[in-house]
Length: 204
Image (cartoon, rainbow, N blue to C red; front, side, top):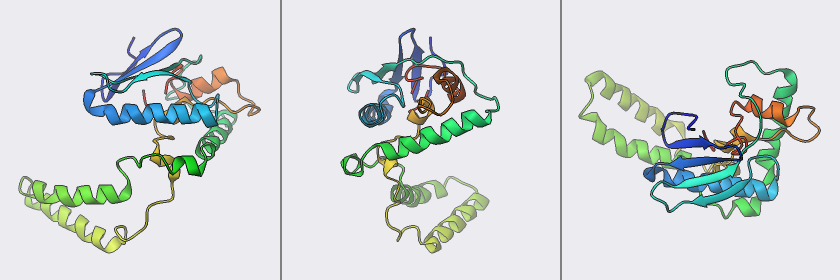
């Protein structure tokens, strides 16, 4: 069954696996999801759902991953033990993949310089369709951007963002060994309870 309304993807929770189907225009997200799962399986096995198969070139790109046991805790308050397990797992997530491996991963869209270029290209097209007040807000925003120094800054040193790790996939982290939290409890804390690795990013 599909656990969430169709947005960029739909999630089918099976007894032994999780199938994540993407819209045709979201092919890049499917590719990043698969890349993140395979990297974590290689460098941090057991931290996230195990990748099983993918068809990125399909009409509706699809990723299949393992399903983890658990009960969703979405909307509930986590206790100290669960929060500590989350901190340990996220730290492991961001340190797992070697820098030389990340260097070969394509930079994902949405980084600082790309967003600035997108804003500058979009504003002239949109200005004629908005009110005077909104146009003035756009101008002020561009003036702020010009004086922020962000365009002259180098690339942010956040290598994990290259692969998309830490986005959707982070939701399906397994509790670290020795963290004092049962894995079933962790999947509940993640708020998914799916096995996609406890369903994974990269996103349910």
